[in-house]
Structures are given as structure tokens and as C-alpha cells.
Length: 397
Ligand code: GDP
Ligand code: MN
Image 1 (cartoon, rainbow, N blue to C red):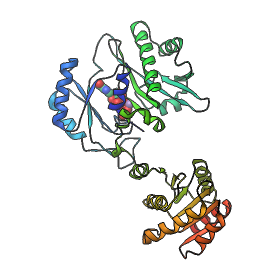
Image 2: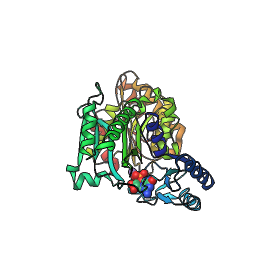
Image 3: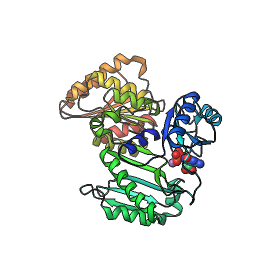
Image 4: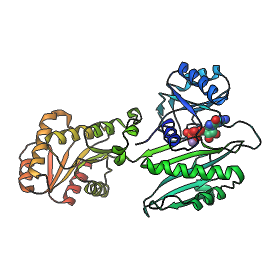
């Protein structure tokens, strides 16, 4: 589950990470109130207005702007709220901005120039460890840094069993070129950031930029956070942060129906039970010259109702030209699934307007095949995996 910047910052703050303070608003009037309140708390008269959407690169798209007085806060908030924000990370239509974060200006002048760094904590799946990636080149997009100056990106592996060790935090502060008060502040920042990542069961915390202010404070100006969905049951307060307006509508519907669905760009819909078989099926579709339109794991109970729900989800995607159903009947009986498909098909009538290829293997597979073949519907059965792929290829040709 992805979070908005302001929500990520709330979590950071709750673990003692210093943040650029802000208040979220969904009207220009609320934005002005928020700015007044921040001025009372922090003394700053300048504010940044930041679009809250699930996409980075907002600054480049005109979604982050500085306001030097309350009139400007009202005007800029009015412009950003409701706009379709296009950034390098959104589609061409962009994302609708429902709310803005009014934040204190933290780039104020002082003894030193403010400096921007990059820092993220994420899981390294290759070795089962966490890692902190960091760079002196903050503020700009890290992909460009990785491409053009990869030697300026450092990584620090953290063993999840020990957590971050003091020497590691010091090494990071040292590699960022810090000394004195800023060095100490950075070690504290790194510790708190790692703790936030660890304790919130997140898969990513990306802070770009981490700022060293002109008076040597270290703080998070931005926050991109992904919480591991499988751990959300332990964090009901984070679950409430879900903003379904930012998510793919079909994926939201699937989740509410208890189906595991991921939208993809291809033309062959797949309905499969088990994540491993689903991935193998996607490979097979590709080999047959098609492209999977989705990942869909219907789970263990493929009865008529679930099968129907799955068909409806797949058919919402206008790119779908064929559907491949690939179910292994281990616990669930194949004939029950076949009956489910036939019933769903009859219930849905004209709604199913693409050919369907069904491969049922396992318990009562022969009965299932008989059921499909004698149904008189536009459904083709297959016994072997390859046979299913060949049939997909044929209907796409
Ligand atoms: P992103 O573009 O979506 O990554 O949004 P960020 O939160 O990273 O903000 C983009 C840029 O806005 C930052 O890199 C800063 O250069 C600038 N910015 C953010 N906060 C402030 C601020 O308080 N004052 C000023 N002057 N600029 C800011
Ligand atoms: Mn950023």
C-alpha cells in the first residue's frame, strides 16, 4: 500500500524523525488557515504548497510551489487543488489533486547553504537483508544519478536480526561529507528512519530530499512510503491511510472481493489459482505470442460466484481479446470449477464477448472437460498446458 507524502511524514514523526512540518488542506481557505497555524508554530512566513498524489516528480510538473504570503498561499492552493497533475511518473492524463500539503519553508538563508541528500531504506530480496541507499546528489531523480554518476550512490546492508549498528550510521554521515553538529544530527536521523521502516513493516521509505538546513538541522522534506500489504493486519491505523482514489479501480474492486488481481498492459486475461501457476501461465501466454492483461489468483474456492466475479473484473479491461482459465484442482474439484464457469457464462450472457480457453487439471478433470465440451458455449477446453497455449495463439491469430 502506497501512502501520501503527508502520511509518510506522520509515520516518520511518530518515530522521532525530524520532518518539514505541514498541514494537509483540501480547499484554499483551509490552506490559508493551515499556513497561519504553521506560522504560529514555526515562525516562518513562507510556505510551500505541495500536491498530494501517489506519484513523484511533482516539483517538475508544477505541483510544488513556494508562497511568500497568505494571498499567494490562497492563490497557489486554488490552482493546485483540482488540477490534473502530470509528472514524469504519471500517465499523460496525469493524476487529479484532491488535497495539498501546506508546509513550512525550510530552505531559509543562514550561515551555510541548505544541502539536499538522497536516502532510502528498502528490502534487498537477493540476500534477504534491508539496505539503506544514499547519495550526496539529493533533490533530483535518483534514476538519473544511477545512470550518469553511479559512483555517487552508496549502499549500506543492514542485517534484520541486529538492526542498524552505530558504526553504520556514522559511516553514512561520513560518506555524506558531514561534520560537527550536522554529523550527529545525521546519525540520529538515520537511526530513527531505519526504526520507522522496520517497525511500520514497510517495504520502502524513500526520502528525497533529506535536507541539511542552513543552521545544520537534518530533516525529511519528502517521503515516499510503501507498507507491506501482508503486514497491514498489524497496523489498523495505517490501513485507515489507504486512499482508494489513488489506486487502480479494478484492483480496488478485486481486493474488496478477496481476489488477488494486478492490472497489466496485455491482451490475454488470465484466471488462475495459486500465485506460482499464475506466473507460469503468464510466461506461457508470452511464449504463445500474447501478452498477459492481468495477474489474477482466484485462490482456493473457485465456485460460480467467484468465477463470475473474476470474469467481470477481467472484462473491464478493454484490451482483453481472449481469456485463459488455468486451474489446478487439488483441493477444489475440477468439475465444480467447470460448473462455475458454465453458470457464470450463462449468468453473464452477452457480457462475455471474447473466446475462453479453459484448462482444468487434477481431481475430476475428465468430468470437467465433458461439462465444458457439452455446454454449447464459446469455451474451448484443453488438457495439456501447451495445448492451452496453442489455442490462445489460434484465437489471437
Ligand atoms: P517531488 O518533486 O514530488 O519529489 O516533491 P518534493 O517534496 O521532493 O519537492 C520538490 C522540490 O521542491 C524539492 O526538491 C525542493 O527543491 C523544493 N522544496 C521543497 N520544500 C521546499 C521548501 O520548504 N522551500 C523551498 N524553497 N523549496 C522547497
Ligand atoms: Mn522528492
